[in-house]
Length: 601
Image (tube, rainbow, N blue to C red; front, side, top):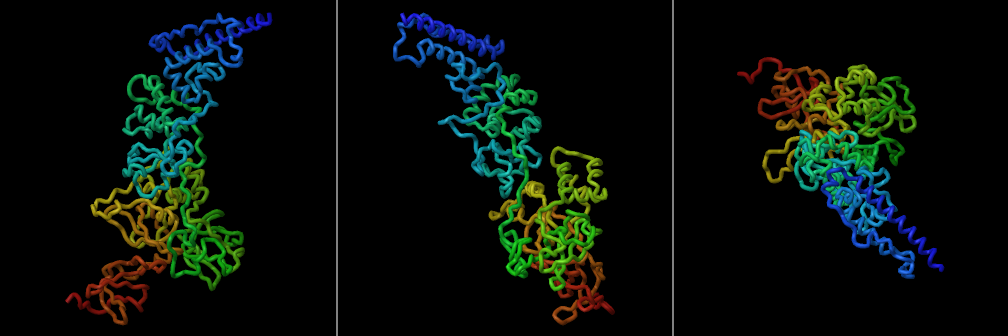
């Protein structure tokens, strides 16, 4: 008699399971639209799937806790039903929901194709791993993405990288396919700027994505195996691109609704290149042999002799012992050391916001705490310039000129800007704010903006010489990055592409090529003395104790290898064809030719 209550309980349980099964199948069918229901063949459950006539006597004693045959038939029927709905099956596989979880009701069934915000794409054991960055071998989806583009902003290849890793690549060739590119661009956010995201993800430049392009970009953006992404895109493509072969901009809202929960939030710092200086006193692989002791320690560090050495070209700001008013242009402003007078315990500083390049002496005794100025990194930029750069995407040099025109009033500069571009401005807009052209032998400073300078390197045309040992023209490299923000002299110009060769001063005398936009002349009063003679003047020069006649060839001259040496005021073409230079502009070295010019006879 004890079996009868158990049999009633079993029948009640079976009835409840039948009710749950019917509700599950109804909910799954609600996911489909009318056209899908018409096209989907009706699935008949196997024989016995709904047979609830089992009695308690027919249940084996060892089957307690295991699924009954009716339950197994129910699972089979639901598997067939879910397999008949491609989009539901694709989403279920991508969301890592097992068949048993879907069928038993332990996991929520999809009542729509919108993903739940709590679900994250993950690869199951035994499946392929998510796409990795080819450079650092970390998950691509973990950081902001970067792509290779040409000078017009169009993709040059199909590969994705971490933006930070791509910015660290030397040269201008894709690290995977070696195809030359003209720039490195960040992949915009699909939620923040869908139109820009669509253009950046397109390989053809069209206003839409093919199914292959969509698979590639989602494999980079989502932390899921490539196989699962392909299943998701294939199953969702009829809804994402119902009118043709391309996914167009209006459908991106639907895509965002379905995959938005799986997108990882990008880090706060995007598109920032950290300085790649070496752990050496000069910050590069070389040093200044003429200042071996002063440059034996890194910038701003204490030497074994007990001093912090100042070197020509070092960048400084006011320190705690400052007592010179507003000669520096205000707190937080920067300057460059142009002369060190160790015996007098002082340094001569040219302040960026000083009046017309004025220079001022400041105390620099042996005790570091008594210094009027202190060292700052070569790439340091004042805070107001950083804020203006974030709004305009101009270089720090162009932003400084814009602020200077408005008496360094940041609010006025922001309010009257003629443009607030979402992207980087054109070269013409950058040049418009940089009014001083760079000339040969100028004292210059390398622009301290890594991302912009890198983009100017990438935009340089390839070399057309055809020589087998040619590197392909001017390309971005780690040495160019290590010398950003430093000063030097222009010693050579390439007339083919306008790039300039700069010899650094101060802690190293490295010779490096840079695009013209990456070089800015600085006010150096010590080298802006008005010459006594003009080009073409007939003069006599003292050469090795003898006075020789010649013609002034140029009013400034220097050559590679001079390092910290001052620029000569004249170069003179002697009458015998040799070229000489006058190191100083005095009658002891060079004089105006007196009497008749015998060379014209």
